[in-house]
Length: 429
Image 1: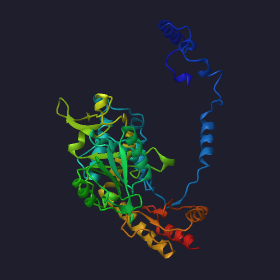
Image 2: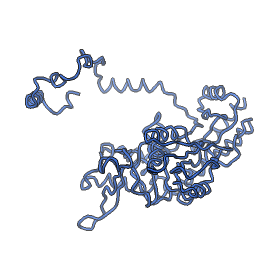
Image 3: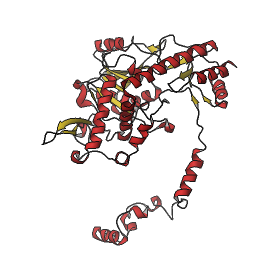
Image 4: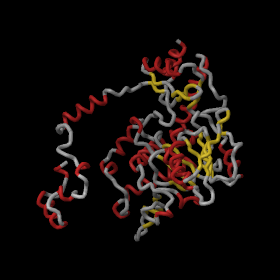
């Protein structure tokens, strides 16, 4: 790293002398000796580019890459057009930083503006932010948007993703709020325990078990108690189902990983957030807006930044200080490459292939736990999930995820009929 430090030894000595220190060690004289590193770091010698490439390939060889995947549960394998990687790997995008200076950041600002526009089209909402870290953070940030000094309780459906629930609990614990989990009945959210003592209700569509919720009825019931409705939505499902806006939802959030991002061993992923104009100023992070310059030409600026760096800390609705800009750009390029019809076609294939998989598994003796309709995921009974999944693993098939009542299966447009039939053959054997 020495070659990347711009100041020379003589310049460092001059700065130390000016600051009243005799050496770099003297700079840390107030740090107790037992906390200081004694000797050199236990690090191996540096490697050449060729040696580094070989080392990385050796490490990567330990990963098991499945050709046939039937697991989702929040992260999904989809086809990604080649143009997506080609565009987002351009140096000007990869190295871009926060666009504080609008006059030299028009490209990045436009990419974020286009992303926000597409998220609004997908969800039907009126405004979207520049993204947050992942879907679980988006859910927790949406709950924070509803915070009230008079009410210290929030409702969360028991049929949401466990990771989202954990992050919501963490946020609420720090804010002194109580999280009340509504039980799931027959795979759907049971609203019988709702009351008007909370600020909001968070549900998921489709929910963690793959079941399609009656989101419109949920919104009407929750609004009757004066609750703000937050829906965690799956991007492809929104191409076939009614949008959150059409269902009366106040805030729509979700995981953007399906929009052009590979599984990548868990990240980086993307959290999207959209809402109506009434709640616009409570959106965390930043919002890019469109305007005109002094010569009347189209231009882009950071319009709203409701975070503690820009307003008084106690008035900030969030402490999210950045966004997943490159992932948001990836989603934009993916959505542009797919287009509305491409997205709908992929969604239709997810739906039809998942239903074909469910029918074939039922023939093999694995019946669905919930009779309600589903999008691309569903739960089947299974006496010994671990044994079945190990059997499939030996054949190079990544089966569903073990859950409380059995196995949560998933199918996307990448699962062919031949793959599904091969899976069922192993299940039946």
